[in-house]
Each structure stands twice: as C-alpha cells, then as structure tokens.
Amino acid sequence: MKLAAGGWLGSYQLVAPLGAGASATVWRAYDGRGAEVALKLLALGEQPELANRFVREAELLAQVDRHPNVLRVHSAGQAGPYLYLACELAAGGTLSDRLREGPLEPAAARELVRALAAGLAHVHAAGIVHRDLKPDNVLFTERGPALADFGLARPLDRSSLTATGAVIGTPAFMSPEQAQGRRADERSDVYALGAVLYACLTGQPPHQAPSLLALLNEITNADPTPPRRLRPEVPRDLEQ
Image 1: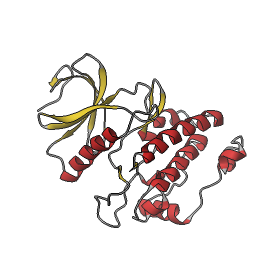
Image 2: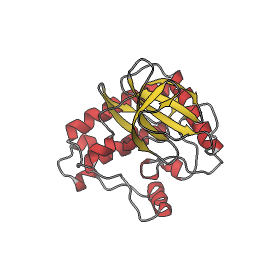
Image 3: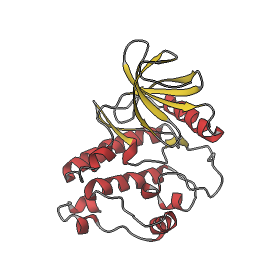
Image 4: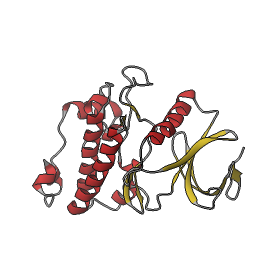
C-alpha cells in the first residue's frame, strides 16, 4: 500500500510527510474529527523487534497521565499494512532544529531543562525509563517542550528486550552504563538530561569521537570539557 498526500489510512487522511527515521515514518494527518495529528507509521513487514518497540511505545504512553512536558498520544492501532501511533502535532519542531542555529542563552537552557525534568519525573513516577533522551526527542508544542519518542522505553520492573550487553540508545547522549551495555534506569535518563543541557549551553554533545568504539570509550572513561571553557558566559551553577 503506497502512502500519498490526500490518501486515507483507516480513519486518518494523510496531508504531508513530516519525516522518516530508521524504521518509522511520520505524517501530518487529519483524524476523523478533522483535528491535525502527527501519525507515526511502521510497516508490518518490518523486523519483529521494531514492531515490538512500536507497540511498547503505545502501551507505555497509555499508562502515563497527561503532563504538559510529555507528548500526548491520542490513539494507536493497526490500519491496513501499518501499525500507527497518532500523537499531538508539535508544530514547533525539535530541540535539534533549534540547536542547529547555535547554543541557547543560558537562561533559556535552564528553563527548558527544568521543564523536561518535570516531564521526566512524571514518566519515572509512572514506572517508565526513557533510555533515549536526546535533542531529537524533545519536541515543542503550544505548551512548551515535551518528551517524545518512547520507542526504546521500558517499564522499570521489566528486563530489557534486547540481548545482554547490547548498546541501547543514541551514543552521544547515553550514560556510561548504557555505553557498557549495562541496564539503564532512572539515573540513566538523568545523565542524558544533563547531556542535553550541555548541548544547549555549548552547541555540542558532551563527548565526541571519530568512531563509535572511541565514543563509547570516551563516555565510559573521560570527563567532558567544562562548558565554561567552551563558552565563558555559562553561569557556574549550570556547569556544576
């Protein structure tokens, strides 16, 4: 089944593609009531593990009560040969989009991370760890910044669906325990939030290296360059 603007997928009318990741595509769409949504789609022929993650994202977000700093999911299910997740449309783009224009002002970075910390605490209180917090997964809604893309998330009391020793997450923003293939928990998300703050203040992730292996080694064994060395106007309290 070929997707095209103006076509229908179940009760959703497709408007225009918003983007595509390694496994899923996202479309701007109208639901049956005429409201705009972001429709995340995964073809059923994809690898079973990808389908499991997609379904898990829907199940986990359904457990989370609404919070202004967590992206809202309206519905999920199957339509034709696709699994779908209908989310609120974040018209403000991603944090990555904003960082391409340069680092944020320190006061703006402080407020942004404070809001994300509130959303993260809410998710943790529901028993969920995100495991892939990064600028790409911070979206801007009319309420402000919101955590999104829980495809790698899992309940805190469930063992990982990946093999022991597998590296899960986006390397540049993952915690040392994730870089070592060990189990992630709430503290891993807190570390990743600190890495996001670092990127907001400096315009770059805390660790950079020419290869994945070198990057994982840096994350595990090296301290990042202090933000004030890269940008002297960063307040000392944000560097600590």
